[in-house]
Amino acid sequence: MERWPILRYEDWKETLATLQLWTQIVGKIRLKLEPLVNHWWNVTLYVTSRGLTTSSMPYEDRSFEIAFDFIDQRLLIVDCDGKRASFALEPMTVATFYDRVMRSLGELGIAVAINKKPNEVTEAIPFDQDTTHRTYDGEYAQRFWRALMQISRLCEIFRARFLGKASPVHFFWGSFDLAQSFFSGRPAPPHPGGFPNLPDWVTREAYSREVFSIGFWPGGFGLEPMLYAYIYPIPEGLAGSTIRPQTASWSDQLREFLLPYESVRGSDDPDRCVLDFFASTYQAAATCAGWDRAALERNS
Image: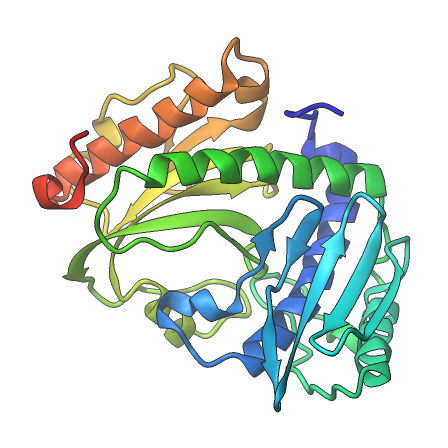
């Protein structure tokens, strides 16, 4: 199987829309059960060698985990007592997926009530009423996961040289992107918010400290899949910075640096291409923002 598979947005945009809502259902279960951690790190999913997982979550005096397996194409729920429930990942409405998840949890004696309204999507149909989104192509879901796996690996490599506060490499189900963040240690001004179907106070918690983030987004709004890098707040002079590789650029629309995924998979050395992008955008952002790089970075 290709390590850097073809992933054209137009070829799987309906599956992407469905899968995003499926991950939101699972992610909101974690949101309901976990205590708040700074920047919403308590709600994310994580890339595994088979797909995406919540990791272990508490439930009363037990724990359990929900995982998307994109190799066997199943959703699996397992608890600490060895009990399990699962069902096939196949074409179905969001309403059907929601019902199957809740029924599977019930089989394990787990009852969780979540907010059924999706976040960060323009058409916020309640999960249990959504019969519109129903497309699922397992091959493309697996391709997406394989891209996540490669980029997650490179995020971990890049993170090793940073000594300051940094997030795990994690998957945000609201915006449907893989992300890793680095912090200067200084507070940030209140974020203006404005994301669809997301309260501004949620965004302000996420951006409460100066932050540089790297990651991967599978596309939409007229864009193909992209690796990204941004800083908040944006310092003067950043947009004119020189970055690598040559296929990367500043987006005035999104106010961040973008590197097309297709240019990565078509390069002679995808790893070097991605790591150059991460390193050059971080150097530009941290320098323009006046971060204490000597204290935050490992020299050897």
